[in-house]
Structure formats: C-alpha cells, structure tokens
Image (cartoon, rainbow, N blue to C red; front, top):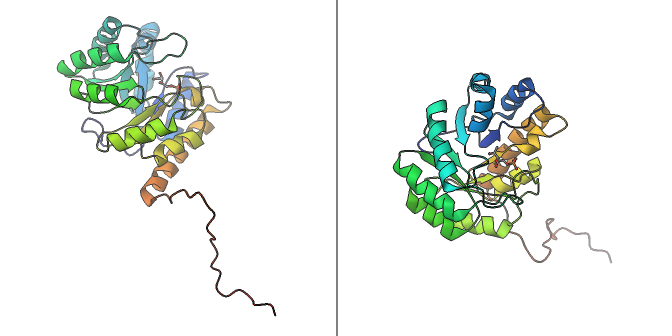
Length: 252
Ligand SMILES: CC(=O)[C@@H](O)[C@H](O)COP(=O)(O)O
C-alpha cells in the first residue's frame, strides 16, 4: 500500500533511455508495472508528447526530480511536476555527488519536510541509513526508497546487511529498493528480503531486448515475493542431510 493505493504489481519502472517510444510502451506492458516514473525535464523537452505517450500505458505516474542537486531545484521541480502531471506523488531525488549519484540526505530531508507540508506524497530516494530514514518519516514521508547501488550501475544489492537491517527496523513502512538493480535475480533478492517493491530503469531500457527483460523482471519480482511469503529456510553453517538416514541397507 503506497499512500493509500494498493498495487498488484511490485515493479515500478523508469521511462528513460529506451530505444524507441514503441519499445517503451511494450516494455511497460510486458513488465506488468502499474507505476511508471517520469522526469519533468523529459516532459518539458518533448512538449507534452511524452505525457500523451505514457497515458497509453494506463499506469499511475510517479514524477521524479531526477537530476536535481539542491533543495531549491528539487522543491521547484516537484511543484512544477504536480501541475504538469496532475498528481501529488513525487519521487524525490536530491543528488549529492555527480559521480556516485548518491542522495544528499540533508537536502533530501529538508525538501521532504517542505513538500509533505504542501500535501505531496513523497517517495524519497535515500540511502539505507536508519537515522535518515527516521528523519524522513518524521518529515511526513510514508514510504522510503533506499538505493540498491548507484543509479545506472547495475551492481545489485551492494549492502545486503544494511538493507536487511532497514527492513527489520521499519517493519511497517513500505520500502522500495530503488536504483542499481542490474538483473532479475537481484530484484528477486530484494523481494526475498521482504521489500515491498523495486524501482528500476537502466537494466530494462539498456537490455538487448528491453521487452523480454521487462517481462523477466516482472516474473522475478513476483517469484521473490512469493518466496518471501512462503518463508525462506534459515541458512546453516553446517551440512544437514536432506535424505533420511533410516532404511539404509546394512551390509554384513
Ligand atoms: C528513473 C529513475 O528514477 C532512476 O533515477 C532510478 O533511480 C532507477 O535507477 P536504475 O536506472 O539504476 O535502475
């Protein structure tokens, strides 16, 4: 449940870098995603055509503040996005580093506080830091989006222990792993850890076959979720025979 909205699919898909608009639409369809994220810059550059294209997907839009490096830029972009796209949902990105594209947690919390007070439903792109997570919740966020790895890196879940701890620390907060996912197995792993959803873009858009990859991610996320719900076995240090030892032939 994200800001009162129940979704069937746990995949949120980015809409940048696809080889063509048609491939983008087919990839969204194949993925089963019900939420797609879109940047205001892209919409501005296409003069409304991009929004019309995305409307064909019938997905809920999650505008983002991608590329914003300051509190001011992010807040202004969010306000414009609400007007342009007609939704109070905003994926809040305030980038701190040009090379790692790591979130700036200080500007992020500040921007989240202002936007939540203005009635936005904020999806903050953050790190797995627990204190920052708590500050974002205090600011009014009802969802947290920790990174898996730097945006566009495809490295998967770089800090497995940190993400596990985050899940345990915020048991009732919807958590979405956002960014850095490179393969369907990594998305499945996020779901197995108990995350509520995954947001990704590059791994699908830059695949040799984006439509096939979108479908694979959709299925992997569903499988990972089912695995989590079915209860994963505990890891053991030592072997434990899986075949019963009674009934073995006794050789004289
Ligand atoms: C589209 C978007 O919002 C990205 O900023 C997002 O974080 C996805 O990252 P990847 O491209 O690494 O999947």
